Length: 102
Image (cartoon, rainbow, N blue to C red):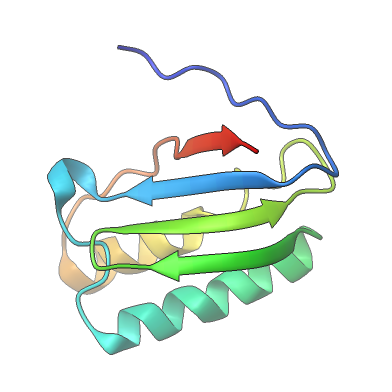
């Protein structure tokens, strides 16, 4: 089934879920978690999103964020994919995260 387009209303919280392909890990070491959190912090400062909560597990993560522009969410996920692919010589694609409005 094709992914549905994101429905983002600037100023309203979004529940973002990112999962590894086929339930594969997206974090393999403590350094991966630290790298992701630092890039998340920098991305949300740059793109002016508010991060209210996050949960990082080995093969998925949850974010509760409020974007202030319609395309802010999509601009923030590319850093971790590039890092993972380069560090572990794997191909993780930067696909659409499951997003739920609450």
